[in-house]
Length: 102
Image (cartoon, rainbow, N blue to C red):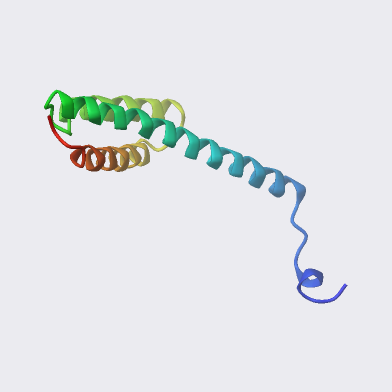
């Protein structure tokens, strides 16, 4: 064998298995996010129909505390979890503000 394949280090089977699992998890996350956004889109339509504001700071604060507690129990950095949820909330509010009111 000649060329780059000959010089490339062999990737351990365990690394390949872990990468496969990571790929599966990433796919699941994408599908979960898609499902979540289907729900939040419906929430936005209902909020618009009932002339409710796109953002709900009280609920958001409760959700952030809930997610931080879940992250802590799962041994995930709660600051990271909060940043991730804040990113999702900002995106949802952006979508909600584009829905025609009334």
